[in-house]
Length: 122
Image (cartoon, rainbow, N blue to C red; front, side, top):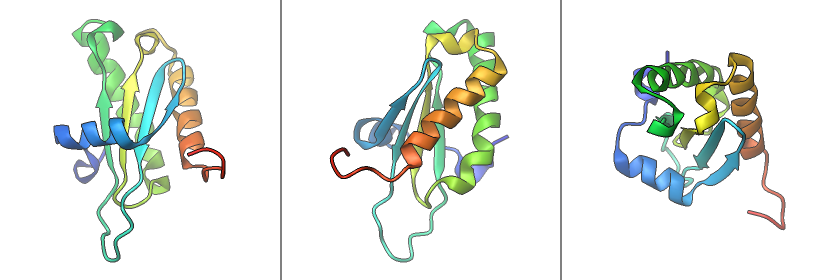
């Protein structure tokens, strides 16, 4: 389970991360990461939110996918910069994905976003 202090709850945080953050897409998930503004003394914990829409499946499937994603995101909290916003959006394929496939896609997307940006791309 994701610690309460790391859960994203405000709509504004979701919108900000999706619109202004870097994006990495995989077959089962799309991950958006917004690095914080570097302010000295701002040691807020990273916030993680999940978007699992109806195309993923019925309510039982959506809740199952959300629980699996929360479980998979927890070990990556220490890799996220303090104050960052991370949004994980499940694609329709996530509802039928094997646990290993979902984990590999999430880890791959996070690796790509946490890698330093090259000079030519942002």
